[in-house]
Image (spheres, one colour):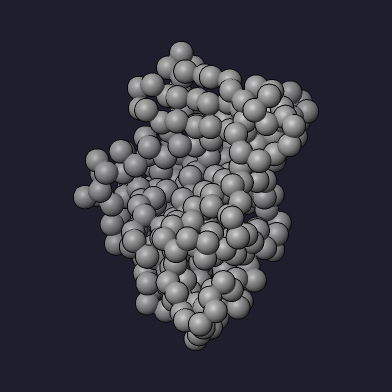
Length: 360
């Protein structure tokens, strides 16, 4: 009997086929001239390699088991039967080990294949202190991205009156970017003495983080005819161009009501590109959330739930601790805010992998 269920084997075969397609695309001269596409395809191929490599080894073990079992049935020579039994046992042990690794890899395969995301940070309750905290989170994620050699591109930034940011939207690209940052979505709470506090009292403020997996255009059903586009003048501080030159782009996806405004640059063309990029990500998240809700009972989504539970983490300055409430565990606050999220993220990945394995 195979050490993996038939439905898992079929999924693994599909991933093996995808891997072969990616290899072929990366040899295509037309693809090789598009450096951005090469990067995206290379990241996907790299994400699939561990699971495809183990699946091919597992398939080899299964073939060895079948051959050994056939030899035991057909042979009469005791020595050959003993050799075949030894080979059968060896292949079975190796296949069982590989099947355990494959189950864990399989339930996170889609996560690792998403190489680009949109990260939105917004100040919550707490006034100026909330904006300062949102700015601190933004810098912590920037440092974490740098440590992972990911690209970190600011799409839009609304600074706070006393510093930090009221809202910020960034694009992050790189290998395993979604599988690591998908857990950051939710409400982040900080307990500390604000720089503006004269009495030394501890305040509680919040910032919200949204993490949107950024799909390829072909993965999303988006009819340009459903989108109303308006070009307006920019608003807010920013020099002579503001309120004079029409460069801001406002998109409304009429079927869903999703709206996007982009005025980050003085170039209308660049603002349009960024606006469409953000619209696709938000629509993808909306479509995915609806699909996840439909199959919530099965709990077999390959890219996580994307839900935003209240207060996923509390940052306690007095104790120098960052407490993740999903893990029930705390981490050194100074290290986390310097960008060292990995120990916390590794535990979250382990927890989510175990949950998905139970749902298989």
